[in-house]
Length: 377
Image (cartoon, one colour):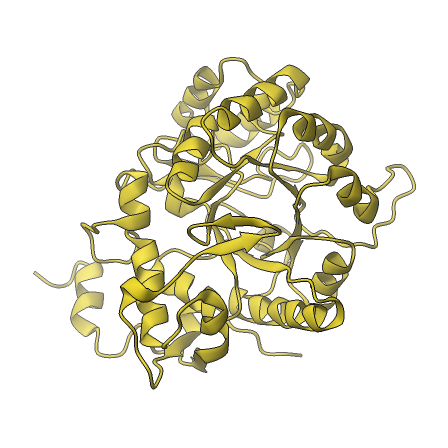
């Protein structure tokens, strides 16, 4: 049985060389598409609607819109959002199961993509394998730039007596745009997904703040270990093919420290949900719920209240008004990289060193901890 590590159990060792953070380039690429910042907003209905995707794109990042969410099922999603937000906790799951039974409408899929595209920003959309062929075709024709094919666990080897599986390699060839595949947590599966043509691979099973997959199914690998293993597959695949596939650590990060540790573990980009659910621009108005919560037979998510912390630009670029690492996350990434002498993310992979340090958050912090527990005046 292997020992695996999460963000709270490790620390980044500063380097022998340091840099001015202004000289650090935190840009990233997915296929041939370049982003100013290595940050994606996850395809959750409480986080990303067309307006949020436009705002995120104009700030240099990328928001992923869920093509199986309420924005492609209802012509007036605001009314539906209000209903989700206002019901008591015990009624959330049955309500969402009912809401997500409404069929996906092709014309709404096209409409939301064209709305984002009209503002001159990159469009990234997400669908599950069951809907990939149908929604992939519509989204490609509507002008989508990146397609994300996402499942709780995605492998190249899927078997079913009744439901035919999507041929990932053929699907990617037909799309003719970068395709992100996920999710996975192991070297072998990440390598398989790269070999069928993924431009990026999502890493993370169950770590999200609103996800209950680990509690319901017992599946998952802590994100530091999962990212390191999948990054090793990326490096192996690059040697094998000469093609670089981005690693996207998806979920489990609550503050700047976690995000920086994801990059030090080998991530090229991070995908965040609850961080952006706190933005004024997020459609959930301070609420956040998991993608698998509406599952008709085995819900794996919950609705949580995260509150509204500030504007999207504040969260990404600051200036930070609070000291817990949840604002100015791009500044935190650049400063962490500069302390390791890394001029870009690839150098951060090479120069950063992680140590096992489970006491790193507690050491010398007795007064902070007491204050959080309400024990200090």
